[in-house]
Image (tube, rainbow, N blue to C red):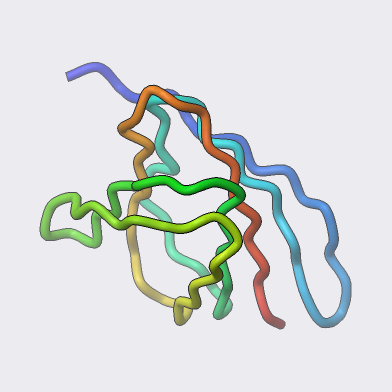
Length: 95
């Protein structure tokens, strides 16, 4: 199986309280396996479905534009945009 292209993360803010990143997921891209060192909030900018794999196979997760979701630090995972549309999310890490 061919490797998927990588998503693009652009840091927007990094100060003593938060780190805010713009996450651009081209169609068919992924994050690859990673683990967050801090708790974080994700804000999708459009309705979308991403595949989230935490080691037991990818599971679809539907997100609504502007509706935030929170995750604790420490869970290793891979996020995949298996759609034909480019997607944008904002990630806010809590320091």
